[in-house]
Length: 130
Image (cartoon, rainbow, N blue to C red; front, top):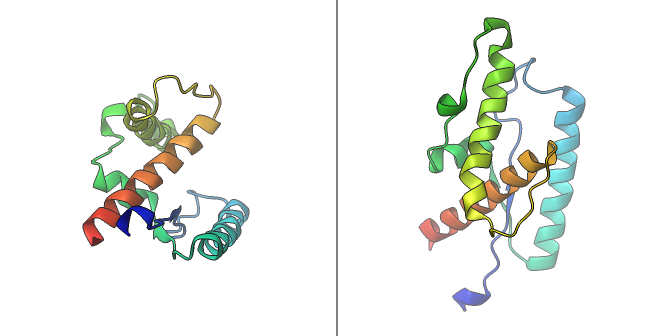
């Protein structure tokens, strides 16, 4: 039945490749991990994972860095914009997590927020396809 159906989503990568946006080694490491993740998920669940690029998730939930972007120094604009989108995603996800959840204080919190956002997008995509 519908309640027994498994839905899986993984983060997409390499939608756009700007030389200043991501180091090649890190990009390919992400690709390798995602490929393994997709394979294992499909083997365990029988469900082909949706591949969702983070930009799709942010657009779906109208998450923008604009409200969090405060760059006074033009040289720091890209870094500030990058941090702003991380903060915007975190601000969107935090109220949707259980109140007793203890968020890490390091960079890991952004990875957790990204994963949660991909999961929310997966659920929304599944609802739209049903």
